[in-house]
Structures are given as C-alpha cells and as structure tokens.
Length: 101
Image (cartoon, rainbow, N blue to C red; front, side, top):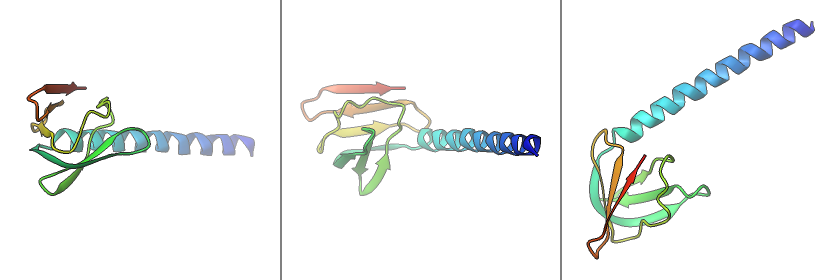
C-alpha cells in the first residue's frame, strides 16, 4: 500500500513540474512576442514589484525577469520591439534607460 502511495505521489509531482515548465515557457513566449511604443498613461506595481503599465489604452504586465527598480513613471515613453528582450524607457528629460533580461 505504501509503495502505491509513493508511486502515485511521484506521478503527480512529475505532472505538476511538467505543467509548470510548459506554462512558464508559454508565458515567456507571450511576453517576448509583445510589441509596443507609447507614453505611460498609468503604472502600478504588484506585491513582487512587477509593473503593470497602461500604454495607448492597453494594459501590459511586464516580464518578471527584469528589475525596473520602480523607475517607470506616468509620462515616460516605453518601447519594446517584437521578440526583443530589451525594454527602452525614455524619460521626458531625454534620458534613456535600457532594461535587458
């Protein structure tokens, strides 16, 4: 009986780990395929410090693999090219900050 429980637990763990890997890969692909260029209308951060920004009327949840250091502010221009891993932040002063993963 104990062997059956251990085997069942191991199978469930393998499926769970597989699910996590697949969902992480899909999430990364989705984040990489996003393209935008616009002025930040609003910005908020989740409990982990990952920003949500609103550009051109659309809200984006930015990738967790970056440290934006709370530098994103309303009025800044944020750009990201399709399948690029670089976010370009342009401050109203002309200062350019690149965030690379």
